[in-house]
Amino acid sequence: MLLRSSSDPISRRVSGSLGPQIGLLKYLNTLDLSSNNISGSIPPELGNCSILDYLNLSENVLSGEIPASLGNLKKMSFLQLSFNSLSGTIPEELFKNQFLVEVYLRYNQLSGPIPFTIGEMTSLGFL
Image (cartoon, rainbow, N blue to C red; front, side, top):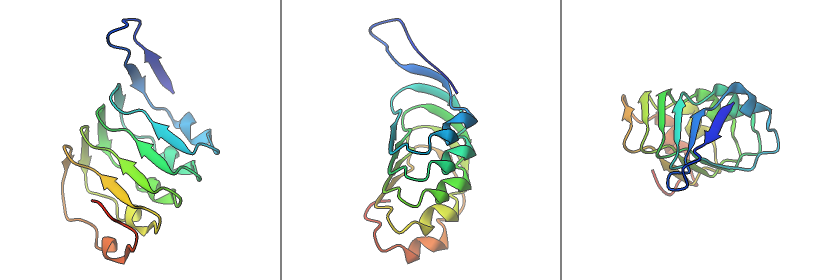
């Protein structure tokens, strides 16, 4: 994982990329790296953080596809990936999580249909 903060006090944004090591944080409950300058793709290993409840990576410069492994985050209730450059389809695995209440994906380059599995969600309140 390569992250660093700017020394400029006005723009103290974290820059760099998320590496596969983030998947080793087994007890990570909340990850909020919003409004930074994080680039690269979302590592599939993030899906190993089994108790992650809150994930906010919005307002960065992330690219690539949303990893299907995020569907492994069975305790996640909040997912915010808006304002990036994510592409591809929305993985249907995301919507197999019965605890997911809020999903924000706007302002990306996503394509394709919304997965059919969304109809099975009883807790989803915002998409």
